[in-house]
Length: 151
Image 1 (spheres, rainbow, N blue to C red):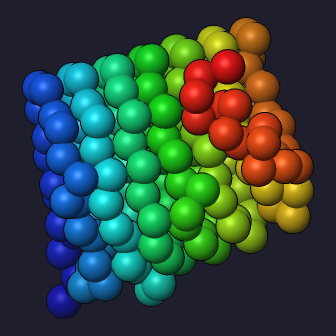
Image 2: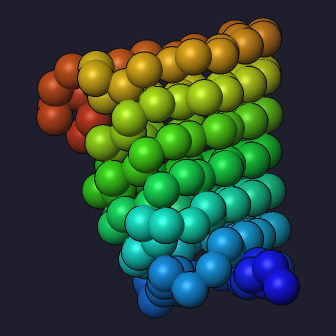
């Protein structure tokens, strides 16, 4: 018997700093609407899927073995305080995805004016950039602060 995947779904106007995703199974987090959210992820043996659609900022800290990200709209996904083994991401609109300590980005499919920011040590194996999208490395904390501020 396989392990069931957990689903956390937020719809509408979301303002929370108490999201907690832990180590019991694969988890899907879905947010649609206007959001300002943060929390803790502790899944060193499982996959976390994040699907954001709308406008806002979401940030997490913690540990994750594998993260699958789908983002669309005008939003920021801040994972700078995360340690992630493997990332798969797809982004559309004017979204920003900022990763922290990440070993490898297996897939980065960036459309429109999206931005993927990674550390210099991250290995990127399959990247597709369409439109005005960019993939950049973060070299300094000052640059990261500017990006978070929206400059």
